[in-house]
Length: 471
Ligand code: ATP
Ligand code: MN
Image: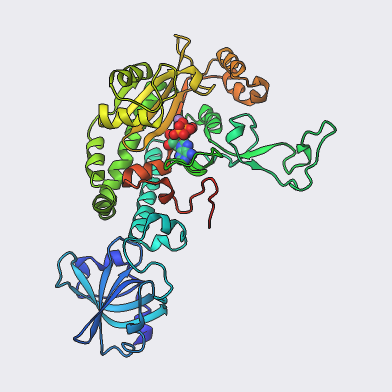
């Protein structure tokens, strides 16, 4: 009998909740969320295994041989295997419940020390127990939605013939924003080798030269796009910027499509369709998790996503954005003038107050944007675009790239960069140059926007931020 039962394949909680299993015998494994004992001599276990935010209710009767000795010791967090009959649930809100034939305990969780006893534990506290927080409703839901977003992203690009390119994590191009980069070295920090002129002798370092963790896969994306036409990268990105905000991490994931034979217009088009596809997929494939976020985290998330999917993004030149902000009559902490980098307060004003939907701002002043962006004929602005969304602000940054060799070389020099160090990047313009464009989407900001989670540290499993790299 036991052996036969053990041979049953495991049924997920998600499946066990389906009415079509009524009448069947199933084997379900998971963690107890709560146990309630009834005077009539039976107990209810709420069981969760992460396959869905919902728990399945298990009825354990006193006649079970280990009822007194084991089942009555099961507290929140204990792990069990239940073999049970699926019966119609007498309660509302779920179709089925499980009538246990046997309950096997894998492990107990001491209620006097297990930290996840009661509801209402703060996100701040949960950050200190990152090893246990995925067992909560919120972090389980975040993990599933983050997974769905990642799946949707790969699906979007694959269905359009984009090639997934793995850009390197360790980079040797030492001039892209070195101040914000984490150095990679095997040099002994107690005995740093120095040259005669006291400079660090990187020839003795692992790679024989200075190396860092990547801040973006774009340059490598351009290399592959100028051979395979449409490519994307999807990987971890590292920025040592000392910004302790709710929208910045030191380690985050970025998705960077790069498209040959594409201009800024095409770039904006893809970005808009891309975001709408992601939002639509989450609404379609994670309904239970989204209902949870809508109820507990932000009452507007579902409505916001639905309205975004079915309407056009606003497109606004930087110059018009500045005009709009100046005319708004709003007092900003950072005053608005043509030439300033838009601050988060400005971005949010445009999407939350002025337009109440996503806004793509394009044609930024050249002085606040990177050297590789294509110069406009006005000589003052470049073909950059940022996609701004309510609450989060900038979610995508992108541009058409400068494909004219001479113009690019000039731009590099005026940005204080040495074109010789970018010889390989310039080769892409030297040999068969093409118009091309791309953008970077921050995965965590996307998860934040979709779920309504206020702090970016709560949408990545193990957040890294200044003075904070636990677990
Ligand atoms: P911001 O101005 O908000 O700091 P950025 O302009 O430096 O962002 P980009 O270099 O354009 O960012 O990067 C592309 C995208 O990557 C951004 O639109 C954002 O979604 C995401 N991103 C950038 N920096 C971070 C960070 N430190 N943590 C999380 N996501 C980030
Ligand atoms: Mn940006």
